[in-house]
Length: 120
Image (cartoon, rainbow, N blue to C red):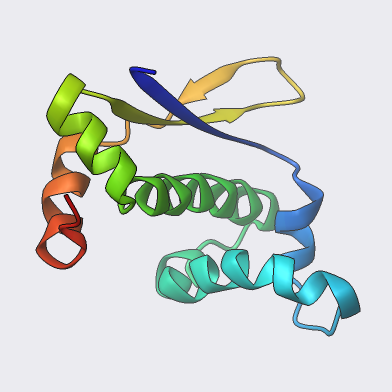
């Protein structure tokens, strides 16, 4: 494998549910990571007044953070060192059928996370 793709989609029910400040029972553990993404980017997201644009931006930020989670793994770090694996973040727009490359800066993220997550 030379490329890993993390692909989210606009109008994701999980992201929409995570945006609600309420107890969703058995979904809570699954939504925790998305809610943490909101918490990390709360200032940016709270500045977006259009709810649909906020929702779409949270989808994008969640993909970005999940790319970072993949990059933090020792396996991906070794694969990058040994054969140049790259992680990509994409979003699928279910309304238009377009696939959007978020242009995740893999090299920059890898460099930043390896300060703490240098696992090779």
